[in-house]
Length: 112
Image (tube, rainbow, N blue to C red; front, side, top):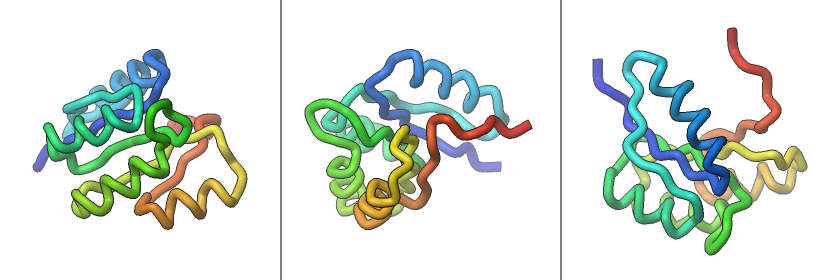
């Protein structure tokens, strides 16, 4: 089975650490990079060419929507999943138009 390589982009260290623990606890998944802002997210994707980036929208220096747009244009095979606290439909639509393939709320229930 092919290992799915993931970059985590969120400006909160604790969120990235928790996501890393959850993801790497599952077989077949590996976190290959982390970013605390949109510019670092672009660099992490360029450096590691992940299959997936899990990204927050509200990040400093370059917001997640613009980072997603740039990642989607430069690396169209990298799937973008937004993880956000914003439940308003306008945020979801902007993220999807920017190239996101999925949108999850940070207060979503954990799968059992």
